[in-house]
Length: 231
Image 1: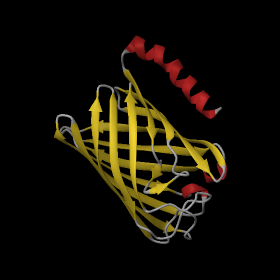
Image 2: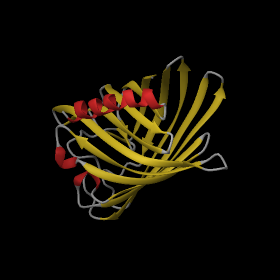
Image 3: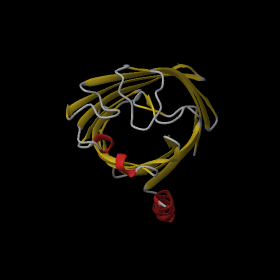
């Protein structure tokens, strides 16, 4: 129901976008071999579909919706994430932004949580710092910082790299929440083919023995693949 309402809201905005030309609508549909969130698997290792919808206004405001299949124990459902923020382009060519998001799980709402973030992005590099007052619904305040790199090594091959660090500011080591800090890394390549992008990557996270609740134990290292269609 939540996904349908968000989709209807976006569709209602489209006629206004076409009339004014001030707002850009974009999105993508993907099939991901394993949905790994900040280094840890959020499912049983099976492929999941994903959908992203974005609205970007010329004034700098933006919003969107991300949906992904997920499995919690033996219950299948969706992870839904709505987000909104403001981005400002600087004279140097870099952009700075700030926003907030809400993540919800249709099969277990006790793990829903909010985050706010600030970030900066250039032509090939993006950084963000996230703060959550109750990460994954638990009494734990967390920070998550990430750096993402995109670098074309060939006209048809792009290098992608990611480094992230989760840090617990306050609270116990709840499921999925480290007692202190935990890093995650990703290195791979993507190949654009028209509106399609194929990606292969190697992901690794620090093995601290802490896993997200209701998810089966998984390796701290994994190969992941994805096929994405952008529109």
